[in-house]
Image (tube, rainbow over all chains, first blue to last red; front, side, top):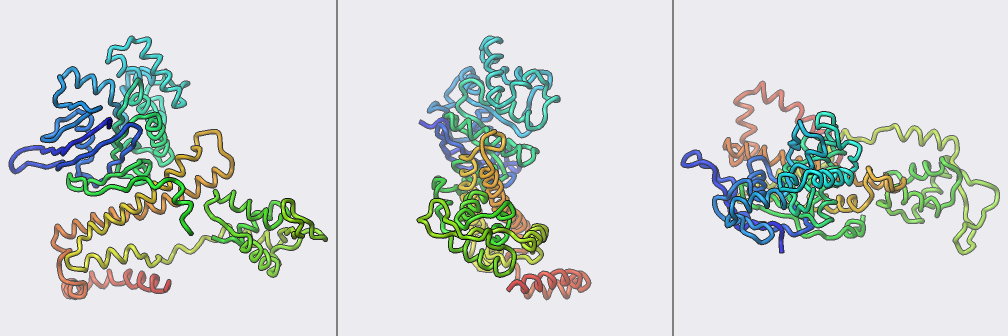
Length: 238
Length: 229
């Protein structure tokens, strides 16, 4: 069963003359362990796709299924639980809360979900340790470098038993080494079974994905073929 | 890529046999450039002829691991070392734009009636991104820069893969920019307009000073690209 399924999603903003059709009949399934990148020029609907997949916004028509369950049919409480427990978000500017330390930022979604403070804190510390940030757990966001903030954001998005990672331009304004770093972390999360959707205009970042889909004027215009396997490139006669 | 200078570089560490040179060459280029042993010996002969390397030692000895066939070890000469140092610092020629088939195809696509140029652009973009995925997959399987594992071979591999990814990425970016430019042109009604000869004529009659200024860089580019033929 796919972790995320979008069925014929359309999204219209505004009415009448101001009407903008952001998405038109987009269908997409993402399996556990799979990374899908979404590319397209600005205004092609990339970010709408992500907010709808993240249940932060309702589609105008079509259905969003998380682990096979139709989000539209869920109660408000159930939807909030899915957001807190199943989905992790990574934003362009990482959105860390400035008044909380690194480990508190990571522990926050667990605490909000009712995990005891102590257990949430331990899970947060463990997630940071896994990303090489054990020594920075008590630092505040403004004491962290860009690369460290980005790792904290990924730790927060993957802490607990999260199954779906949604990232919008996750490398933000980072340099290429740190941009690669963020993709390696998402790639590693996928190897552990997390499904990921990464929106980016950067082909180098997108090339980390198993599948790249191209949006054009709100439509799924094209996508890359299934992976050919790493050996194909080396075997190609030069 | 200069096999000649790569062999000189390997010999600058000390005398080596042909087979050894091949193995070390492949290891240091991240095993991305295969090199056959015939190429190695042919290159060594030319280097010896030019006085850049010389046979090391008096007697040919059996190379370990071969069937007792006598093998010759080579060492770099002073002239060879000077040549190597000089070569490292001479920039490869980047001043002449290559005659790029992809650019040609897009230029032609916008002139053929009924051709969806965006669809043509997307076909090339998809191909490039797929190729980038294959390279990135190789990089993803190799140890990362932040991992402490990985020897000099992994480092060379990472550098080679990055070079390819940046090269392909620049082509994708050009396609993105080209698409943006074409869409703006289409919105202004300039894309479906008259063929180039007519528009050039109208531009010349419209503003001769401006077109004169524009003509000069075009002529320079034309000479450069033409020179590569």
